[in-house]
Every structure is written in structure tokens, then in C-alpha cells.
Length: 438
Image (cartoon, rainbow, N blue to C red):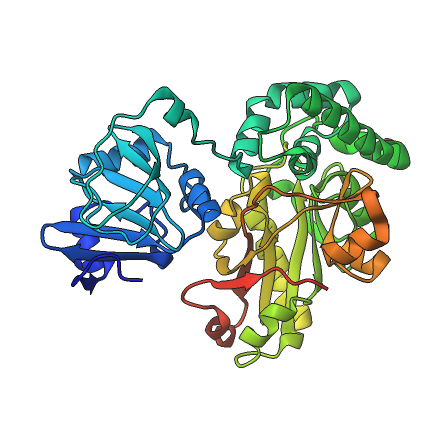
């Protein structure tokens, strides 16, 4: 639907970017037109999408003063609005022409946001207003996963103190909280203090089950070494399945065992495990069709369940990966490896990227699933109930089954070629996948 009569289409690079810093806007869906001395931006979106774009644009909060200030400094005020079929944006003197009625408009100026409600957009209409307190209150942004991560980190001292009291791993407690708390997030807000404290207790009880199950081996693993361990003290080698299972279930943030080949760094002096990592078979069917033209999928493996204790020496990951990479090439002729990173628990893939891993795809549609109030993986539901489809699981399991409703960041699928030919399988721009339903 053309928003400006007689306007010619221009790309962001042709006009928008030189005139306004639009780096915080979602480029893929944004259009820009210039008409006379006016420029109109619009983004095809529903009202829900519009509210989401206000809350989170490219991972940044629009309410962030630094983001808003870039707009103000560019010499423009941005007007955000929605209507039935399009969302309209205008320059300082207002929206020139928008063909829709009954809409709401958000104005951003000087780092403040204002609302004009139920405005009837008319051709050549100009919107200049001073919002009332009531109008400002009409904007209600839904909580984001970033808000939840910030909340947990702000209370990290409480989380870690509780872990020390219960003699359980503080990192496991924090990350398991971030897996389980999303089921308590509603459109109205984040979990309250009482809910969070109850969840800390519930997750701690779960971790204590593992502590009792593995007894002394678990407790000894948490004890810091008598003297600092250096990279020169580490010895790489295989790890038996039973020991790997203990680390997967009690220390790794997912909390479930994954079959495969397991490896560890041990301290040469004490024999203590410093970090572990596993290699599993390649089962990413939605990625297989992308790599098949370049390499045999049978030569591809998945690196998973890496975990290192807080007292591990700096650069443990890159050192461990170097040893594992060499072994995969020499003993298995592996051509390409994949790994998953979950940004919803605060992971940023920094260590992987420093070791030359690259973004292969973003997997959208992430939803956490719970059984009896506890987080479970998609693989768990497939292995135990034959499906991962939430609707089918709801029918099978009733009220004991829950799905998170908060929007989660896409999972990052990283890849690294181990042979030159496999480099062709890495895209210039990460693929966009939808999370598969089995």
C-alpha cells in the first residue's frame, strides 16, 4: 500500500542512512520514501509486532537513552505509529500521508517517548502534541528475556550465597534459574521476589539430588584446587560415559546427559577434571541440506556439553578445542563441526568466536518446555513421548506440561570447518532456520 502519493522508492543507503542513524531499526522490513522535503519510513507489522519493535529492536531496547540520543542528534524526531496494515514513520514535521484510520502514534524526542492515541491519520496531516501522563501510561512494554537475565544477574549475590549454603555449583544454579524462570513470566511482568526465591529453592533441591547421587565425587569437584592450575598442567584425554553423565546432569546448564564421545582436561598433578566436552552425531536435519552440496554429512559432528569450572585457567576453552580438533581430524577424518549457543541464559559465544567458530544459522521459534514445573529438552520429549510438538504434548500430558510464552532469542548454530573444502559450507550471512517440530 503506497503511503506517499507520487513518491519514489529509495533504499536506506540511498537516503535514510546519510540523513538519520537508522542502525537500531530492523533493516529487513523497513522501507523508505521521499516526497518533496519529507521522508516517510514504514514497516509492515501487526500491533503486536510494533510493540515488540518498541521493546526490542535488533537486541537493543528502544528506551535506551543512548539509542534515542543518536536519533535526536541526527536532527530528526521519529514518529512511530501503527495502523491496520502498516506502521508509519515520519520526519520532524510529521507524517505526510498515511492511508488508514484509528491508530496510535509514539513520538520520540529528546530521549522521551509520548503517545497520541486513537489518532485518525489523514493525508498531509501533521502531528504535533504534548502527551499527557495518562497517554504516557498507555505504553506498556512486555518483559523481555534480556530483562530477566538482567534481573537474575542483579541478584547474583543472593543466588551464589544460596549455592554456597547448599554446597552446590553456583553457575549451575544461576543458569538453571534462567531456564526455569521463563515459565513464570507473563505479559504483565517478570516474576516477583517471592516467586524467584521459591524457584531458587526448587532448583537447589534438584541440584542437591545430583549431589546426593554422586556424593564425594560431586563435592570434590566443587572444591577449589590447593594451588592455581595453569594450562601447562592440563592433560587431554577421553572420559568414560558414567563420569561424563555426572558432569552433564549436575554441572552443565542443560542438566541432561547426551550420548557421544566424551573428553576432559585433567590436572596432571592431582588427576582432577578441570573441564569436559562431548562430541555427538550430526542430527541437524534442517542444516544437512545446506551442507550436502559441499561435504558428506557423515563427516560432520556436533560439539556439545562443554563445561569448565570457575577455577579453570584462562583460555581453557581454546586450549581444549585445539586438542579436540586435532583428534577429530586425525582419528575420525571429520570435515565440519557444529555447536549450539543459547543467548537466553546469557551466553555470547565469545570463546567460540575467539577460536574461529562462525555463525552458521540463527534458529528462531525457541520455546522452553516444562514437565511438572521442570525444564526439559526437546530431545527428552522426543525420546520419552515420541514428539516435540507442544500441542500434541499438551494433549498427552495435560496440565503437567507447560510452554514458555516470553519471546526468546534465536539459538545460535555455530560451525567450524576442519578441512579446506568444508569452508564452502559456511554461508556469507547466517541462515535463518525455524526450530523443527518433531
